[in-house]
Amino acid sequence: MNVFLTGATGLVGGELLVTLSKRSEINKIYCLLRSQTVEVAEERLKKVFCLHDDVYDDNKIVPVLGNLFDENLTDSLKDNAMMNDVDVIIHSAANTSFSRFNDDAVEKANIGGLTKILMWAKQLPHLQTFLYIGTATICGKDVKDRVVKEDESPNLNATHLVKYTYTKMKGELLIREHLPEDKILIARPSIIMGDSRPIMPRSPVILWAMATINHLRLIPVNEHAQLDIIPVDYAAEAIVKLLFAKRKHSVYHISAGETGSTTALRLSKTLEAYFDEMPPFNFINKSLLNQVKHWTKGKLQPDSELYEYRKYLEYWKETFEDKSKLRLLFTGLDPYLDFMELGHVFDNNRLLEDVGIANSEPADVYMANSMNFVEKIDILEGAIDP
Ligand SMILES: NC(=O)c1ccc[n+]([C@@H]2O[C@H](COP(=O)([O-])OP(=O)(O)OC[C@H]3O[C@@H](n4cnc5c(N)ncnc54)[C@H](OP(=O)(O)O)[C@@H]3O)[C@@H](O)[C@H]2O)c1
Image (cartoon, rainbow, N blue to C red; front, side, top):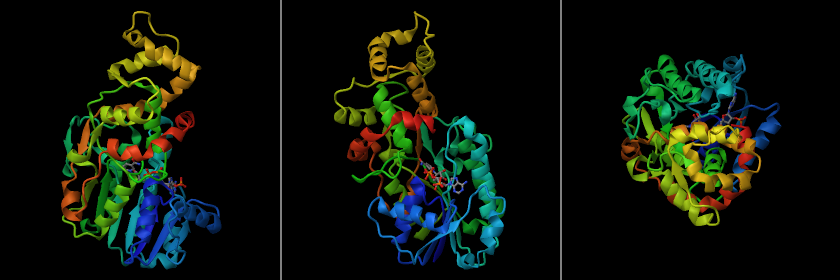
């Protein structure tokens, strides 16, 4: 089997690459990377393996230069004769930003880029499977506090918190426009955070939100809302097993499901156990977020409810000194708090039945292995680059 993988330098793609490289059924893994030279591309791929001392096999792993933004990406892939033998495409590359400022780039990468890959895919002589790494959150923000099944999406009437999930939903529709059903496999992970092993997590992206919440301690979110979170090692194992499994469906949630989900309250207990010198967590109504923002601007009305939490406001003043830093943190955190409030649990019965993988451990349990990494995250740096 020959695989073409995009996004190999990312959180999910990196772990997929390492997991795929260990499968003896796979002959070549062509990796699309944005890079000026093959040497630099190879260095970037080697770094993916170095992180956890995995073995890099340069007979198996082949860098392919390309950017989802390139106008001529489809043609350059078509012209690359060695890739005519690709049987499986795994499209993991995406712009995953939640920030409004990146909406155009998100659309260009996630819809424009996907279209270019599909135009190449549909004329490949041996294509068996186009595996699209989607996202379970395409169900949108109207679905609240319940278990969501795969069949509910894509739903054109869903309303989205961020452009990113909208483009991922459109992506699934695009694939169905261009490829026959028997070639399509859609894996929809829930929220991927950290690693369940006591090793350096592959990326701090979502961990950033956890580290920021840890520093703030007064959090405007419903602490009882379910959070469907899985670690990246579980996500990669499940997706690769799914690729090789006898499948009854073309769409699968890669998720914690009802048994493996957690809550902000449970995660806060894991954080409190390790960071025991900070004030205890206090969760307040999400509607108070606006008062927090006003307070960071020095514009909060004196009779505001937020003053009931004066102890925390004093703690913020001491910890952050400059209120503009807090403003930055809350701006970065804003979309994460919106998602945390939704209470989505993504049904994982299809995955458990067809792949035979066990449930993922809840995040409050496996994250206990990563507290020393959470401690090292520069939360201001993460807030600047959302
Ligand atoms: N992380 C999650 O919680 C989560 C949850 C559900 C679904 N997903 C899905 O999983 C997939 C991977 O997400 P991730 O978390 O791994 O994201 P990530 O860490 O941000 O990685 C994104 C990858 O896409 C590549 N990429 C971005 N723009 C590109 C472009 N213009 N041309 C070529 N490559 C480009 C990046 O390459 P560079 O290294 O060059 O930037 C990187 O390898 C996405 O499709 C996402 O929708 C993620």
